[in-house]
Length: 448
Image (cartoon, rainbow, N blue to C red):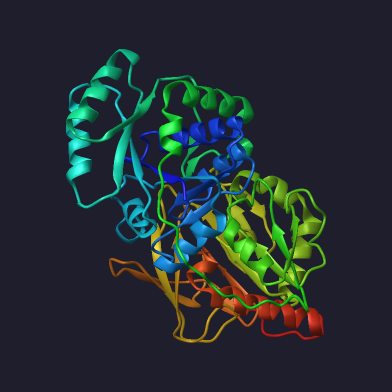
């Protein structure tokens, strides 16, 4: 299996830019490539998707055991697979790029931002090569390194017995950022032109043939899932610029189980499609709060659907949308669906950021009593009532109550990853099947 990981010395070193440049160059060469992202990231995979024209997929060693990660890599690999790391190569403990590289036996190429450095680059290289050995680091890419210093980089690689995979010069291509990371690919002006330029730079300055020659072992990893094709429930999935944070693997898993997906836009459509289940994913509803608020027929349609007992998963931005109002950072209040009598409001710092474990003392749609679910939170927003269906606990022992749960409902800030525990998807789909078989008259308790 030809594959490699583009890791970095830290956040902001240029991993995403160089990964997209490589993917764009491979596409231009006509090479069938696949893209992956370590960790619980939504935005970087959007750029991967725009670069190669197909979905990118997450590999997360906090959410998934080794067999599942290897299965996902097998499932979505192509002629050449490129995995983008997360933060610095060794950062993140259970969710680090280092751990994913070990589980998948993937060769690692580390990106160093060389701005303002010359010989000190060697100290950085030596540190990464020698730390936490054995590791899978096979070489380096030198970002923002002037061409006149290329001989120095090649010399350092020879002295440290590692491989030189090229430099990446300073350029005028920039992807804008906001507080959750990069501005999404669909919001980036001239994204196609920017990716084309990056691809040309990769072709000129990176050793693409050498990168494409890197290989890792293949795996015999399998996962069995139930199939409900005799019923084929329909899942309505919110999808527009306000609701764009979703794992493509979650959707694929629902389809493998026999579900039919119908996408809709809470911004521009008039109502929820006729469906047996509802998935309101995260995103940036605050940036489109006025448009969402003005679409009154959709607000009523969503409220009626949830109140009628349609099986519903609403994560983060989707949960904010189900509140009475979104109060933006300028103090303006915009009416939302009003399923819950609470308001979502802006804060000036990340709230409850990171990986968490959820545990409930009651049965609900997504889990049994006392069952633990791995999840994550990443948002600057909070709510006057975040629900109390789960106890969320971080790895440092901090805990809090969160989420509304019931026989047909999960709604809260934590994001769910179905492959972390396939029973979550199974229970959700089974509820959707019940809805399809028995119709709206079979109305269970939708709110816990």
